[in-house]
Image 1 (cartoon, rainbow, N blue to C red):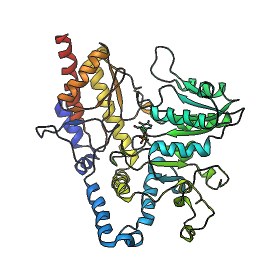
Image 2: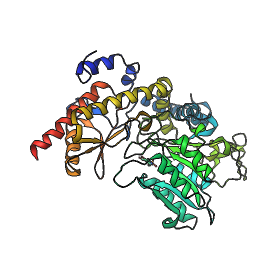
Image 3: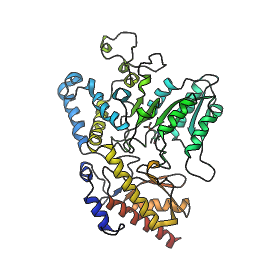
Image 4: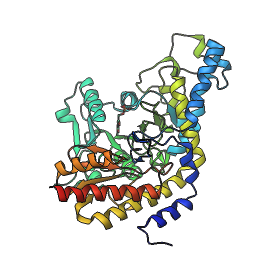
Length: 430
Ligand SMILES: Cc1ncc(COP(=O)(O)O)c(C=O)c1O
């Protein structure tokens, strides 16, 4: 085997990668000169599978040929189309099919879930989130608190890392839940923190929330398609996710939700209803009384957008073939290789904020340039100009995620070369 930081080594790893053929199933972006870029932004918007266009075209064709009859007689009848997605999505999140539904977008689903699972009382009305929560989650939570007549200044508990630290310590999460237990209604945390890339232990958080007498939901935007998840076993009450990041289902893709089977028949839960959540056997009798479908499908509102469901089907079918345990194993290796190279070549000048132990990280590394945010921003811009696509998050983080479905070791090596150049040229210039 060649020296681990050499191009020969990276090429050998690519050659022996059991998942290498999946790369050919994606459109790989190029720069203005037609040269391939290093695309490490799958944590933000995943790449387009080549199968996507064909699946959308199939529906356009069936719509043009069959019109309304396509609901029953399209090659994939539209009335049942979303059910084709369910088993794949359930496999990916570690749930039973009746616990999963693909619908709406993430924030919409979060609201629908909170309508049912945030039921505050005078004594128990608080929601625990993290201070670094994605803004949409915070807005949704605050608006739900206000909707119920409470004040976020009192009802919102924000969990922050200790002073001088970037990451939340698991024991601090546990302690915060314990401390609030008399007044806690809901715990809402991410599967992977979007800024730092830190993985949260769902299987530990859910039972502690329950012990405290609260319900618990997870935002899996950065976890689905990235980690091996066991949502059912975690005991979470609900979870929501989007499908445009690691799932590669396209900008604004159809999202998903999980409702634990213990709530499948809880028809007395408050919920916002729509006809697509109504019992399938009697839906078209168009009766006035709403009878929810047992399980997650009972939270559906509208008939699903088929042209948006097709890219999700394309994506989930690829994950089904690639298998998430194999993807996770490659991801740990590939991102581990990135971390090793950054540490060896850029040592103290670039700090990896993401925890490096395997269970505590996914594909993403969040990098902080030691010379400060202004230099960090310039390094990020140099990377973009040199054809390395990642992203910048205020105040000072460069987020980088090699995706195991379509990225490889040679790209990791090239990325670190470009990063090295950007950082050291900065030293010469400044
Ligand atoms: C962690 C997290 N939560 C929520 C959202 C909001 O998603 P949407 O716009 O699909 O509702 C995002 C979007 O990137 C996200 O990263």
